[in-house]
Image (cartoon, rainbow, N blue to C red):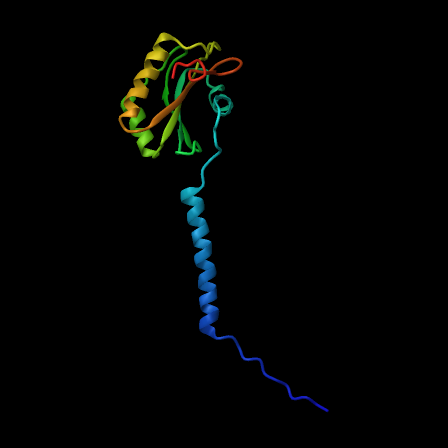
Length: 164
C-alpha cells in the first residue's frame, strides 16, 4: 500500500530573517564587548609590574619615562613612553602626565623609567618627581600605585620600599 507523500511546509521567511538578524545582533554585541571591555593582563603585585616593564624599558640606551595605564581592576589599558632623555636624565612634565592619564581614562597608573647606567637605585630627583606626580594625579582621582625603576637585575619598586 502506498502512503501519500506529505509536504513539509517551508519555514516562514519572516522567522528565518528574524533568526538571521538575531544571530547578527549577538555577534555585534560580542564585538562591542571585545572593543570596549576587553583589557590587558592584570598586574597584582609589584613583581608582575616589574617584569612587564623590564621587557619594555631595558632595551633603551637613554633614559625614558613611561606610564602604565590601568583600569579600576588593575588591568592594563595601555603602556606608553612619554618622555625621552639623555644617558642620565629625562625631563618629565606633570601636566602632560595628567593629560595622558585622563585621555586613557585610567583609574590608576604605574610610573616607570629606566636607568641606562644599570643601577636601579632612585635619585633624590626621582623621589621628588614621584611625590609631585602622586600629588597632581590625585587631584584628578588617578591613583599612583608604584614607580618602578628598571636597571640591571631586578627592577626597583618604590612602593615595596614604602616610598609610595
